[in-house]
View 1 (cartoon, rainbow, N blue to C red):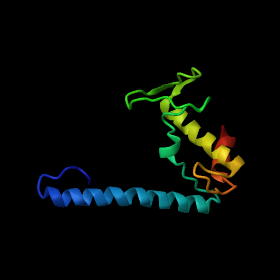
View 2: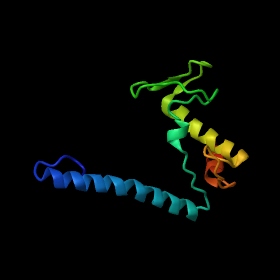
View 3: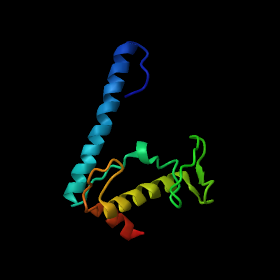
Length: 124
């Protein structure tokens, strides 16, 4: 539905913007609702500050990459991992660290319980 239109381009562009804007917010609300049903906790990682695709999970140093680089190779410690797997591990490490310190990057308190990530970690 968000493809380019052949006619009425301005009207179609406005509709595309509004559909894409509302869609992400609705998805977050749906995830939060389902987690509350399962007695889980929704935690949003501040990805603009953490930069999980650029950060090494082993040494926590930033290694700049382009979007074409699909493999994370840390220039500091030599850790090699698939970029997406490393980013997921960085997010999980950040949440676990916040659970211990109960502070996020900006110093705001986070919920002490993070049942959904504990459940996920117990499966691995």
